[in-house]
Image (cartoon, rainbow, N blue to C red):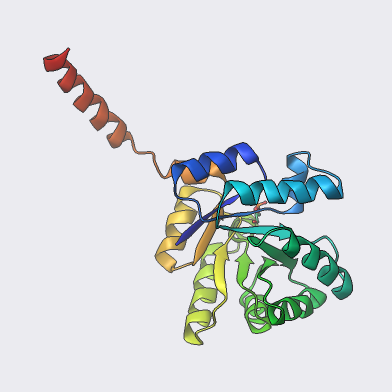
Length: 219
Ligand code: G3P
């Protein structure tokens, strides 16, 4: 399973990159706003900065337009910024049309805001590179987000659909581990979820003991 980081924070992207396990980045307008990135030129520069940190990884950059012409116009500009850019398109009717168009032009896409299997099926039919089901937001409303990931993985495998399942809106380490068990292609999560995988009290206790025993004999 590929690990993407879900942030527009350059420090956090660098930290995950330095860990050596980062395969890509997802951003969205809310994450860009959280970092205070505003204005067309700054937003574009920020995407390029991210691409330059995560060499070779796919970087999702989301369109703001919601009509076909606008999505295509914005998406083509974003895709031209850097070869690592993946155009992130919302799951709406004109979004599906635009994904089909981008797919015919060889532009990678990430279909976002997916909340059921029917939407995921449509995204795959249109030729999306990635589909982003938001599992945490489903859990928030007492729906089973992991069950949706499982359902989409099953449907795609059944028909050998090449669209990659990118589990998004991941809130904690168990979400991440369960996504790996289910067979999601990618999980995108905040840095604290990725680094949360490092933690185990027995690791800490064991290491402390090893170091103490070594120090007893070696000073
Ligand atoms: O990639 C989508 C993700 O950012 C949504 O996460 O935590 O806002 O539901 P969240």
